[in-house]
Length: 275
Image (cartoon, rainbow, N blue to C red; front, top):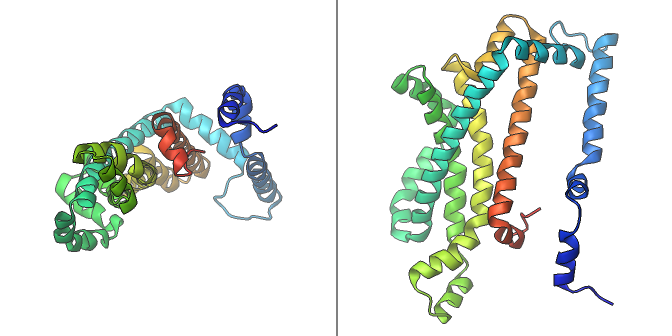
């Protein structure tokens, strides 16, 4: 006897959260990562990797503990997260708002396209010295850089998402929906998955450019910590900082996807992004 969709949903809802979480963990990937750390440790200890400033993972763990003990890591991490999230949030507001207008109003897109293409062609890293000249060595400069970097994927994905398939618009016309109703009930749900993709890309880029701005433009945060430890010839603490940056990126992306699935589960499932 076949199982109906409501029955299948009920069965899925009864799956314990711990089992569902285990189902999402990539055990093979985790095993490969641990194996890689073991090979790294062995290669450095035996001299197969003979670099003067390449510490084994065990020394990196010690360096991480030292950064935590002195409080350097907590302050640097808090600064970087504040800047990256502030720039990303501002880019999200601007990107979704402007992208909606550009995607819905064809004349606005037609007259803005050339300017947008010219600005998009500008390498984002080249914008850092400009921001330093305009805002000096400050957190505001970092936020501007992070916002500018994160804006483009959010803006472009929103524009693409708002250009709903014509057949869906025709359905709205058949149902005699008003323009606000078409926007709220058809265009926005259809665009949600692409907007979420843009937000994910923007968050990663915001974190990366925040680190770049800290390395070259503002002596604060994890970016400056990495440069400072490299110049001080403290490779274990520098690699510990790199590890923290990677973990921060993974955690931020995971939190964003959890929030998106809670808020837009139906739209993401329909687009194959629900996970």
